[in-house]
Image 1 (cartoon, one colour):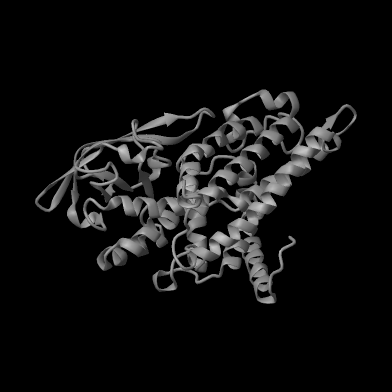
Image 2 (cartoon, rainbow, N blue to C red; image 1 turned 180 degrees about the horizontal axis):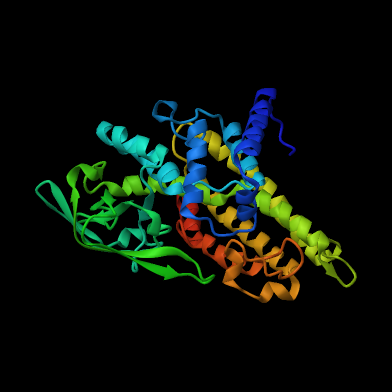
Length: 396
C-alpha cells in the first residue's frame, strides 16, 4: 500500500488486522473469497461480531452508535476486511436506512429503529424499483392512501435483494399525483409480516435466489412509520442513494479480487508461459490496476467530504468506475480459467462443491462473472449516473 498514513492510522490498521485474525474464521473467509453463498446465520453472525466490537456503523455519528472514524480509518477498515475475506455487511439497514433516519427521522423513530439496526433485531430490505420504475424511479406507482392513523398500501416492488430474509422493508410510495413525478412520493417503513404482503423469488442468471418481487394488497401501515414529510420522500430517496452508490464502488473488494486474479493468472499457462506474460493480457491487467489506484484516491476524497454531509454527485462517479473495474476483473479471471471459464455451473456458488474447473483460484469464475453483470444496472444504471454527473457537476 503506497498511501502515506500516520502512525496512529497504522496502529488502527494493526488493530483491525488483529481483530480479523481473532474473530474471522478461516472457513468463513474461504467461502467469501470463493464467492460462495453465505447463509443468513453467517451474515448475521458477522454483523454481531462487528457490533460487539463497536465497529459496525462507521459513518454514523457517535451519539447514535457510530464509530467516529476519520476518512482514513474508514478506508483502512474496509480495505483490511476485504483483503481478509470478511463478509460485507448487508447494507440496507446500516449503510442506507440508518443515515436517512439520522437526518430525516424524528426522535421517536431514531430511538426505536437505530438500536434495532445495530443489534440485528431487524433485517431490512429496500422497496424502490418497480416493473415500470427502475432507473426512472420517480415514475413509481405503488400507492399509499391515508385513512385515519394508517396508510393503505397497494402495488408491487421488484429486484428486492435478500427480501426473503427481511422482516422490515423501507418503501417509496406515491401519496399524491399532482405536479412533477418526483413530488407526491413518501418514504414508509413497513413490517414484512403485515397481512397483504406476498414475496415471490426471482431466479437470476447465475441460478441464485438473491432478489424478489414484493406485492402489497391493502397493507396497513401506521402513520408514525412515515419518515420525513408526506409527499417529500424524494429528498430521502436521493440522500439514501448517494450512500448506496458509494458502497457499490467496492474499492476494497476490487483490491482483494485483483490480488486473487494476479495469483490465478500467474499459474495459468498459455503457449508454454504464464498468462501474466501474455502482452495483451498483461496490458489489460495493468490498466485495471491503474484505474483502481486512481479510484482509491477519489474514494478517499468522497469519504472525507461525507464527514460534513452526504456524498454528492461524486458518488455517481465512484459507482460508474467501481462497477466497471469489478466487471473487468471478473472478466479477466474468467479468461484465466481458459475453456473452463465458459462453463457456468451454479453449484460452484454453494458451499462444499469443489468441481475443479480451471486453474487453481479460478473456480466459479463464470458464475461470478454473470452475477457481477448486475453492478452496472442496480443502484441506478450507469447511464443514469452519467446524467447526474452532467447536470450536477458539468451544469449541462
